[in-house]
Image (tube, rainbow, N blue to C red; front, side, top):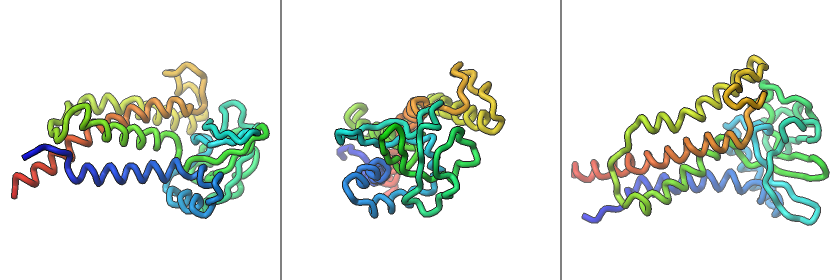
Length: 232
């Protein structure tokens, strides 16, 4: 029997593709005039805390060029005005200009639009840490058969998976503690005196975790599929 990837693999890959597409497409839908579809996607993802401070936006400059940047620049919070236009369960009391983003805004601040320094931007439909996991997870799953061979069922040592999850675990924990106690000492690992993690750190730690998930996920799915075939 010729080895190939399992049917579960292709199903999981399609789901991951649709998930990523639904996250990254939203601001471009708004710029193309499809606000109703964008609004539906924002509300589809309202399970996420969607804190604008931990999000990236697509901005349009004066000549009409689009670029991606942090919605809120750390240390320059007062330059940005945020607005909730599409998410139905966002609390409007958090719309406006803020000079400090408190932890109690998480889960309440669903703002999608950001205005700063003459620019207008719209956020992706999920926060950075989440799609920093989803995107590498999908990309590694796509690349896996070409790099490691089709139908591979041997799962790598689980200890390496724990190592890959350690950075995101440390960052998430220190971020939580720094917010709860309002004390940047919990970012001693970075030595930046941060009160909040950065989107770059979220991309790095989330990317490592997501890539590891893809690397372990594929052989596990293949093993399940081939085990079922042997039973028949």
